[in-house]
Length: 339
Image 1 (tube, one colour):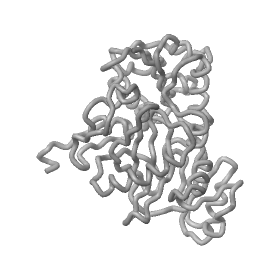
Image 2 (image 1 turned 135 degrees about the horizontal axis):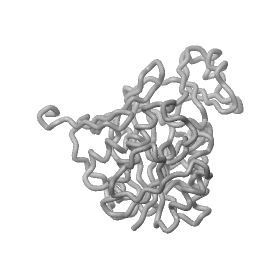
Image 3 (image 1 turned 180 degrees about the vertical axis):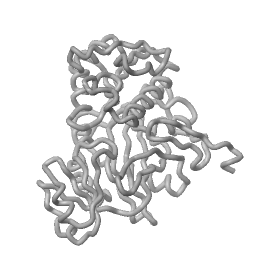
């Protein structure tokens, strides 16, 4: 088996940005995800990776194709992926980047392990996802958009809000404000304002091969309050949080249009009791938590994409024993320190 892996930051997506102007955490986060997935894939497949020469190769076992900054991005990815059995794309939803990459490679006849059709469209637009979940009865915070005022009365009675891009990636460009009018000043056609809800920041990942789907353990997200900046995570969470996360995430994914495939991350807020749990957004791509999840689970997570491994994900780590930073540095508590 031969698998192409394209990671946007290291693979030419920011080729014209000076390296010293790219946020260090962004570069390291992208490289950490790339390195982790390539290491797992290399256990059962030959991997092909397209890379700028200013970045370190993710693995000595990869076939690295040099990126040429003078040529178009996606055509180089399609050429590098030609002859591969499948392709994985690690790219942001912003500016339609992920959708463009998936569409270009599929148009070239390449089997891209990613969501399809309306699933990818809705998952890449936080307003469309919010509208769908509310229409489906899935718990989601009240929201406001320039084109959707349905909850304006409820929103005006709230005190605190989160303003974010509709196509944002991770916690980039998210602002927390007090007062509806202050939030309104930050809004534009590409913005979504949500009611701020208290609780624990949690994510749970789904792996879908197309034939099988399995949820991985729910984990905690470390997010700084003032700037709403993701700094890493830890897990697995305890049994009660696992049940609650699985319940609400299952409802959120079931409400989505077809077809979920590949890695899907669901961000949640879990409150003091189940009735205060909310789904916040869905990410139709690999997320940074993969670097920690692969240390929690028996077997090879990437192998599940190809049905080489199936069945429930069996956890091998103690509660809250695996920790990682936003740039992919993983630490694991010893049995002595956990117990």
